[in-house]
Image (cartoon, rainbow, N blue to C red):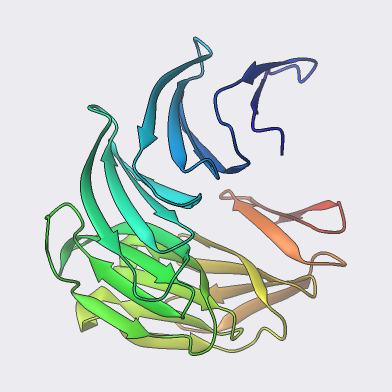
Length: 260
């Protein structure tokens, strides 16, 4: 809550403070030597990690910025009241605006679909998923539907190789949507018995963690639940995967590593 970012050296013995935000930082992502941060001060900042300097400040949101998604030289950001903006990092300009109809943005991302082109997707507090091309000013959504009634879409990931988007909501359900079928659900997973806090895709695998410490692994092709792992004693907050390892960590303060 001190509004600063810490850039740690490889030795982890010391760090450099990156200062500039005046509110809590909600998300950080790094691509190469460039980092982007979002904050409750209603702005995003672009950082040069090598030089430890702020390259630009992206202002325009009227409310705290809760999340963003990176796509090449573009970043899409969402705020607490449902405002969505697309930014060009090369010019530091906002090139697109959109308002959700269901309040706070819970999840957002991009997918390059063979059937529908370059799409952006946003999940909001009402459980509605909206899909559109935000780069085309004034364009209407190509899809908008309440997928998780009564619950925010807290998480959404894409599987580019299968042209699919996976959503997870407060109703403890996950849906696998196929862009080649007008975003019709091809799989519905109801295995979780608690709120889903984390979601990650890796190849055809869909990895999800819940409040009861469960980590489930689903196959997006067959729709089957392949594994159910009692990963943590409390909520699984984050998941990472490599071709040989699966790592998860949660509220119990532990990180668990699985070997495929």
